[in-house]
Amino acid sequence: MSPTLRWPRKIALAVAAGWLHVLARCLPVRRLGRSRVQRLTEQGEPLVYACLHGDGALLISCHLDESIAPLVSTSCDGDLAAQLFARLGWSCARGSSSRRGAWGLRSLLRLCRAGHKGVITVDGPRGPAGKVAPGVLALARLGGLWVVPVAAHCRSGLTLNSWDRAQLPLPWSTTLVLYGRPFRVSRSGPSDQVLAERLESQLLSLRARARRPYRKPHAEQPPIRQPLDR
Image 1 (cartoon, rainbow, N blue to C red):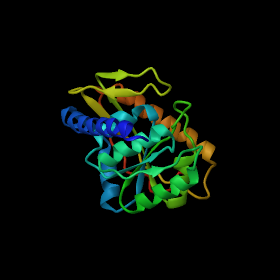
Image 2: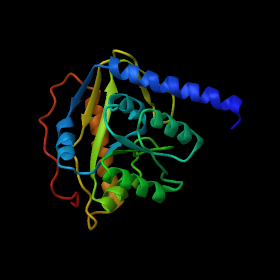
Image 3: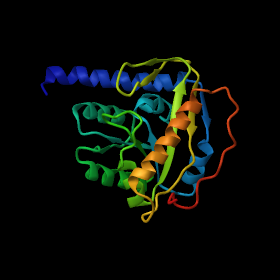
């Protein structure tokens, strides 16, 4: 990349990172189920957040206070995302379901074991929307990680006309983040296809609940102590 193009990109990334920090301070956030994540963290258990691609931008704004390690694709868009995350102080694993996937999962596993919370957009980087790719399940099975389904919604935001219908939060928009019940994946359990369908169901259920933020939430349940093998 020539110097004339490099500096505008650096400036844009700096502005984007600064805007995210400002936005994070301006979002009234309600978090339901976060105590489940806190218990796992206190016990030193490695975990990975599983979310839909369309919730990614909103979840970034709500987790700037955590040590996060996203799985980022090796595409040109992924290069920009990785540079932005670096400015936010996050470590990234590079890979996807279609390019350097195994290498990316191994890199993410190392980061999770080092104390970072992994993040995988389960239907990324290109969809179809809402369909869970097997990467997060392979990672959980390989490393014994807890999988934490998570969804978010803001009351006032911009919904993009993109394949994932991504929502960009607006300042002072009430935001709800829902953390699902954590689970582990057994090495001898059901196939990835079966588990992917279950995870899809959980994420879509969380997303539907997030869009009804003023209903009384269900009582929290502790993490599943047994592998998800039934």
